[in-house]
Amino acid sequence: MIISLAASKEHLRVGGTESDGILAFYIGAAEQSAAEYLNRKLYSDSAELAAAIAAVPSVLAVASAAYEASLAAIPASITTAENTYAAAITAAGLIVNSVNRAAAVAAADAALIVDKIEIETAAVTAQMNYTAAQTIARETRAGMVITDMVTAAILMTLTDLFESRSDTVTGVSVASMPFGSRSLLQPYRREIGI
Image 1 (tube, rainbow, N blue to C red):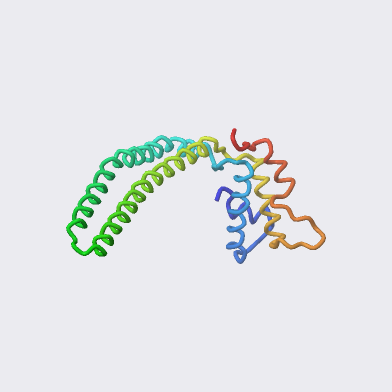
Image 2 (tube, rainbow, N blue to C red):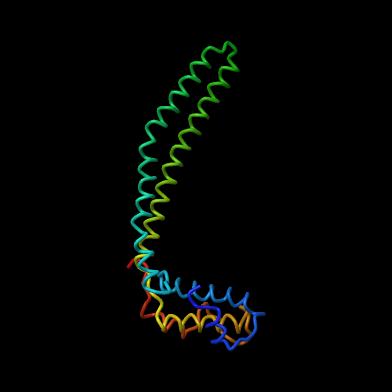
């Protein structure tokens, strides 16, 4: 949590500890709501942001190496699958009973298909992991250190969550984030694709 429980309790004028659990939950929700509206990760200070950005190259290097290793393993995996298939077809050819021979060929065909799917799945998974690492890197680099305006917006959202505690309010419009919070966050909002 970026906003402390103590600061939240002071803002809401809540004493005691009986509400600490739900407050911690609402603080997390309010911070997540602000981060999602901003399209940015939020950091408590510049050192935390700098550390996250510094970790990006190693995260990308690990994901890239795994992807390259997966791609490099494909030819050998295909050769192994095809050799296994050829051996199974050769063995099936030695079966005298035509029904059993056909069943053995069908089993070999199915095994080859499964092997090729597993090879392709491993490559696609590695590519997806690398793409996810790239996305995390972009999001990390676009992160921001929390400002007073962002803190105020989070506290406004927290107040709304804590005081409403329900989506159903008779005679009142319910929004996902209070208008005042959006107004405070708007100058820092990073549009999708930018």
